[in-house]
Image 1 (cartoon, rainbow, N blue to C red):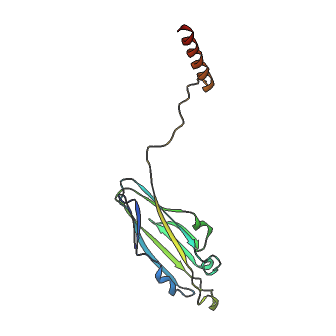
Image 2: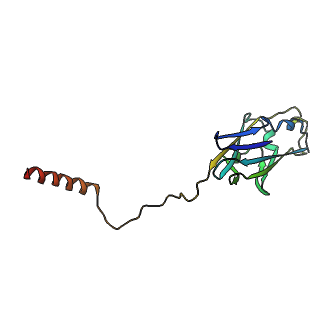
Image 3: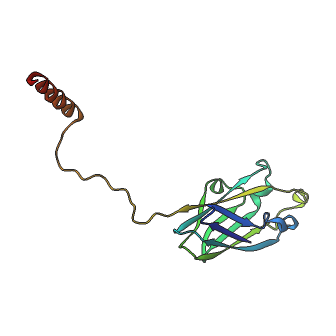
Length: 169
């Protein structure tokens, strides 16, 4: 699997479409690992994020299955596949132009699960996004000079100037 941010097309491309397809065969005590590469082909540094959406929220199998994600040797997430933490975007990594990074994931099913879960399936939708990182463009507060000139004072001064000009004419 490769996930690439295409700078010109402004699209995030994930291929193959269903990289968790092999997880349907997990039985209690099993785990499956996978790896994909995040790559930045854009002109600017990009931050890569992911989140999930559980499509069957009442399925407690996904509460019991565990997910671990590691990017660049750093553990990004470890916990249940159906977690509130995964409903919001989590940063995977930041990549400079032309750089890539391997992301590994592991889904495991606890060995304590019994036959109650034998025919259960779970559907989870994965979302990936990128955000361009702007360097050196921090917003700063305007410089304060100590002058306290209000808008109201400026309006009165303009009215006064117009009145004086009118009287002179």
